[in-house]
Amino acid sequence: MAKEITGYVKLQCKGGQANPAPPIGPALGSKGLNIMEFCKQFNARTQDKMGKVVPVLITVYGDKSFDFVVKTAPAPVQLLEAAKLTGGSKEPNRTKVGKVTWAQVEEIAKDKMNDLNCFTTESAMKMVAGTARSMGITVDGTAPWEN
Image (tube, rainbow, N blue to C red; front, side, top):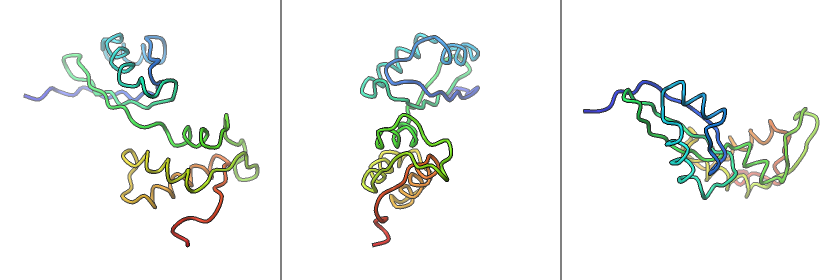
């Protein structure tokens, strides 16, 4: 018999550095989950992504047990890393703060492919390029599909 799902919790934590302090503790405590057990499992699964922001989707079951799925880092975080920036532009339509290449956009798109709602690498690249544009980051060169 399948377990009864009572809810979901979405969090963004730093890989390998989960602890019971806010925001993790209150979010899981309100659902009645074992916070330390989650922290141990999460830290073990994300040791290769140490210090990077990682989204996690936690499925909460009726018997207070849980499963979780670790997703890839958000596209804005990866774009800031690729452009070697600390933050996006306050006025992205006027002030450009950095540049990335189409090769970097393609790399990010391939990494995010499982989490995006698209079927081709080209459409994933367009989504990542749109995110870059909304952050004030320009994409250098011509798009591969325009050649």
